[in-house]
Image (cartoon, rainbow, N blue to C red; front, side, top):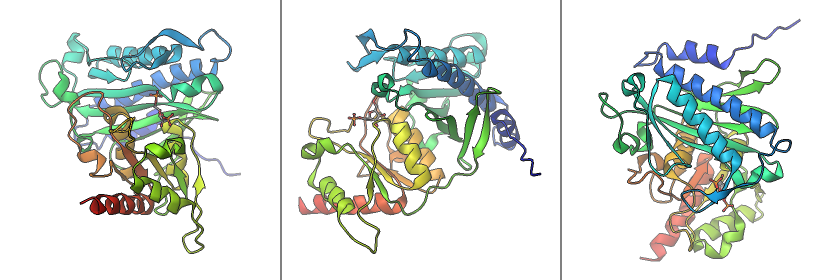
Amino acid sequence: MVINKVITLNEFILETQKDFPYASGELSGLLGDIAFAAKLINRSVNKAGLIDILGNAGNSNIHGEEVKKLDIYAHEQMTNCLRVSGECAGIASEEADGIVVFDDERSRKAQYVVCFDPLDGSSNIDVNISIGTIFAIYRKINPVGICDELDFLQPGKQLVAAGYVIYGSSTMMVYSTGNGVNGFTLDPSIGEFCLSHPNIQTPPKGSIYSVNESYWNKFSPGVNNFIRYCKDNDKATGRPFNSRYIGTLVSDFHRNLIKGGIFMYPATTSHPNGKLRLMYECNPMAFLVEKAGGMATDGAQRILDIQPTALHQRSPLFIGATDLVRKAMEFVYEEQYAAL
Ligand code: AHM
């Protein structure tokens, strides 16, 4: 009989973080706090159809988008778990206009700040399609005193850790502290995330493309030419590629990470900077994909090199298997050169 040892997330964090350069236990604690918040969010997501938590909260978030009750709940759970931990100096969330500074005695000494999208893909909540939570952890620039906005406005290459939780057919947390990407599936019977996807590497060659094609008349010709390339017949490269689009970044990204593909949310004529947020959508996913052997660009530069200037700034995003992202860039650059 083969008995596989189950490694829980907490065991894994403790084991891997002890060699971390700044090991003080703070980062381990933070990851544990985020996992705990995710369990609370997961509990509510699973009950979404049962209790009166579905539907609009009756107001808009700071971007003028419809806010669901679960968005607010998820934001509060993440914020509260991080606030009481004393390991986080402050947060930036999609659901908060500015940063939230934790000003109690312990948090003032904390070395990390966290950016998060508490519930990504919220328009999919009502229709029982998978959604997620995305997080990005930075070290404070100035170790002394309370945090300020500059502690958050760091390029993604400065990230200490990033990850996401996907509330799908099972609930999974996938994260990296810079050394490998690991996935943990929540076992509801014991309430623990257990290591299920060690050392995730994304296939270098992808065969899936994910983009909201309904914007085709708002994309640049280069993007449309790449989409056409994906649809063309070509035995040698295995085309046409499969088109898959869920409309939840976490879910589209997760599938492509495992199976190999490209996700795109390019600039459109109505959204010249794309739709997705740099700080808590593009950066954490770019960090993960690079650690898993893939790449991420905004069409002009590596996502992780972008110097942010505003908490909620948007960025175009091309992310996934290296061969497909490079191929997409060939079409984008061709268009740019043709315009010179
Ligand atoms: P949200 O913050 O309102 O959930 O929006 C973000 C989501 C992403 O998860 C997803 O990739 C994208 O919006 C889908 O947008 P669209 O419906 O324009 O294709």
